[in-house]
Amino acid sequence: MRTVRSFVRREGRMTEAQRRALDLHLEHYEARFDNAACDLDALFGRHALHRIEIGFGMGESLLAMAQANPDVDFLGIEVYRPGVGNFLRALNERGIENVRVLCEDAAEVLAHRIAPASLDAIYLFFPDPWPKKRHHKRRLMSPPFAALVASRLAPGGVMHMATDWENYAQQALTVLSATPGLRNTAENYAPRPEWRTLTRFERRGERLGHGVWDLVFEKVAE
Image (cartoon, rainbow, N blue to C red; front, side):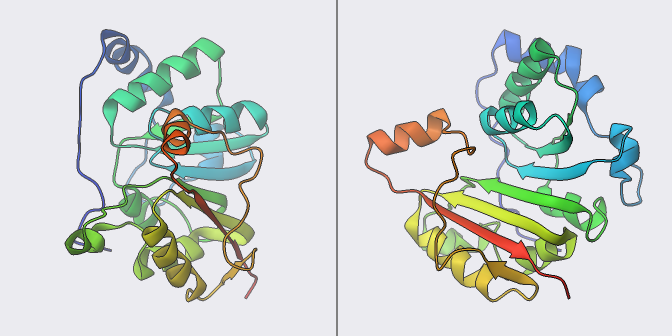
C-alpha cells in the first residue's frame, strides 16, 4: 500500500527478562497467518469482537483493555521487540489468553491479513509523530491508511487515535474527516475516555505540559 514506512526498528536495550519472555512466550502468543486473510475466529478459537492496537509500545493500554474485556479478542501489533517482550511477560504472569501479537508492519497486516469489515475497533495511541516537516510523509495516518482503516472496520466500529503532537492531531483530523465511511463522534477532538489507560509515556508528557488530543471516528453503514 505504501513504499514509505512509518516506523524505524529501534531495538534499544533489551533486558534479560524481556529477552527471556520473547524466547519462552512468543510462540504461544504470536498470531500466525498463511498468505490469505486471517480467520480471526479461528485464530482465537471462538466467535467474539475483534480489536487491534497498532504500536502498543510496552503494552500498558492493551493489557488493561484485554483484562477489562475478557469477552473481546485483541490483536496487538508492535515492531519494538523490548516492548513485545515486556508485554509477553505480563500476559503470561496474568494468564491472559484473549490477546495475540504480531511484530510486523501494521499497514501490511491490515492490507493483506485482515478481512474487510471484520474489526470492532482499531486503536492508534501515540504513534511516532515524525515532527520534522520533511518526515511528515512517514506519518502512519495518511489518506491511504485512513481508507484502509475504514474498509477493515465493521459498521459501528471505531478508529481511536491519540497523540500529544498538536500538528499531527490537526493533520489526522483533516485526513479522517475526509475519509468516506467515517464519521467524527465529536465536534473536533473527543474527550479522553476513562478506560484509556494513562501510560508512563503520557504521564511524563503531562508533567512536561504536553497536551493530548483524542480522535474517535465511527464507521457508518453504507
